[in-house]
Amino acid sequence: MLEQILGLHTQSQGGQDVVGVEVRDNHNALTDVRWLNLTAQIGYAPFEAWSASENISSTRTAVGQYSAYYTVPPNISRDAIVAFQASAANPGGGFGVGSPVYVEFPDPFLIWYRTVAIGASNATVEFDVASNGGQPLPNVTVSVRTAFPSGPILVRQGTTDAAGAVRFDVPSSVRPTELYGNATLGPDRQVFFATFVPPASPPPPPPPGPRLVRENAADTFATGDAAVLRFRLASGDVPVQGQNLFVYAQTWSRFVLAGRVTTDNNGRFEVRFTVPPDSVRIGISGNISGTWTVFHDSFSPMSRFEPTVSSADGWQFMISGVFPPDGVVWTADVTVAAVPESSAPWIAAGPFGPHRIVAGSGSSPFALGVTLPRFLPVGQAVSVSIAAYSPGGGYATFSTTIIAGTPVSPGMSGPRPIDWGVLLVVIGFGAVLAIAASGWRRKPRTPRSS
Image (cartoon, rainbow, N blue to C red; front, side):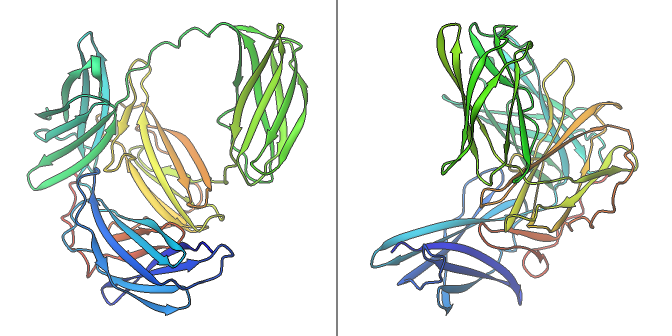
């Protein structure tokens, strides 16, 4: 019989955190194991070297249930991941699972980046640094380490000018895909992680021959909804009219749809079905101009997710909402980017990639603040996207556009912002708790606001 570690959870108790482990068999029944090993390892943003693994002694508290005490080190001074690993063994074999704990720490700066030019030999990447209040900061030392897809690691260092900007050139022939950096001003230091994004270029001409495009790929549908997927069939730029097609939609276990459709005068048709709880594979085929052609697409149900955005001055925004009810744990990556018409996206960097990360259990409220830096021009459109996911496969997205300098009337009254002095505990297949920071790490310095 194959057992599996189903969950880890923590709770605060007397300055220590209690780490719990549940072991269940394939029938979801709690079961004991011969031995259990629990370790903790700390990795600092942005994906720097991990600490040595620390063994944690555990105690059996009931059938299939074990607990251990863990104290978060008091010297954590920037965003970090505490990775718990649990492994167990029985005479029939061993198995294990890992779960991360995300520790959020106040950042002293706002850091944005963009690619401003790509020449014959070099690409120019700009980093812009502002205070937490949004004011550009001069004299900030910015160092960047670039990891190329293949080849050497390149290091650059410079100081921001009066506008809070510093630029680096990297070889355009082997552009990096990832950028790791530090921004330092006096005692304040902030790490960041960014992804190289080239400036927008005109789309290539459509390839010859038939091609199928889903025109409403951004639309989301929850389990039980009547999904309407809209497609357009064309050959080059010319719509394929009156084409009969076979459509099959299936999950890994059953058919959702099997039928025929015919394109209209614009080459368009719709595929309709009731959304199952699982991902759907879609096959569309037909004899097009004498050749049997098959197209493939996919679809995943999305949970309903409708946060509210508000701002009194158009620079400091509050995003609040409630995590979807399905899924034990939800983690949300928040991406913020300005998209000028004639250049690459201007993206807000974060310690682990996304600008912000929030977490909570199903149906729990969340709130976070987003401050736009004043080096963005008034009237600049800024995209705010939230991708929330749960370990069980749940997924939800939200996207909206805000305008720098334009207030947004408050919607529904949102929950209070998450206090900077809390530890967000994000445990796969377990619980999410906000543990008071007092007692396990020092109080951070007051972030810069001017």
